[in-house]
Amino acid sequence: MSKLAILHLLPLFVMLAIAVVTDIRTRRIRNWLTFSLALTGLAQSFTFMHTVTPAASFLGLAAGFCLTFVLFAMGGLGGGDVKLLAGVGAWLGPLPVLAVFCLEAVIGMVIVLIQAAMQGRLTQLLHNSALVAVNLTHVNELGVAHVSATGKSCRSVDRPLPYAVPVFLGVAALVAASWLRHGTGG
Image (tube, rainbow, N blue to C red):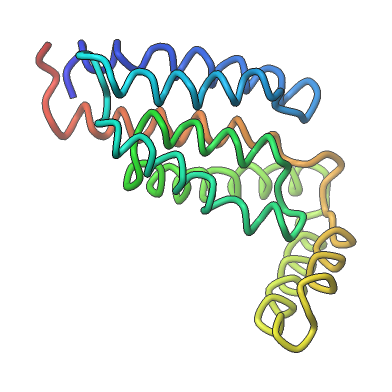
């Protein structure tokens, strides 16, 4: 990815940075921001400086939404988190948003592990995570409502993870890896 191509992603990074700040402060990502992210992602796909084609932008939006909607339905994410990844998908397309989803999951896990360890709750986090995992494997017998209630009752940290942080870091890591892989020419 060239320096010029990275400049095309500047609006994405600005909106994600705003999302990070507001998510850290309030644990909410505002609708105006997520809709702006999605709309500008779709709009840029129709310009000559596009990061993805219009079809890839629409597929990325759908992929970002679908990847996180199940977690939202189970109470693991908020609606703003779902719309945030959908907006990222509109900018990057379906396969890159899948990569961001995987990266942010690992980054988020590391953040939560560090946060729990600093609060002296690492053992509780591991116990609660095992309990949720067992419930998930038996979701057919227990039902989604039971699994969701178990997840909500097993909070191991004081405040939920601000989802925009690992998403921002995941996008930055993906762009940096692409830039390094494809050369640094401009």
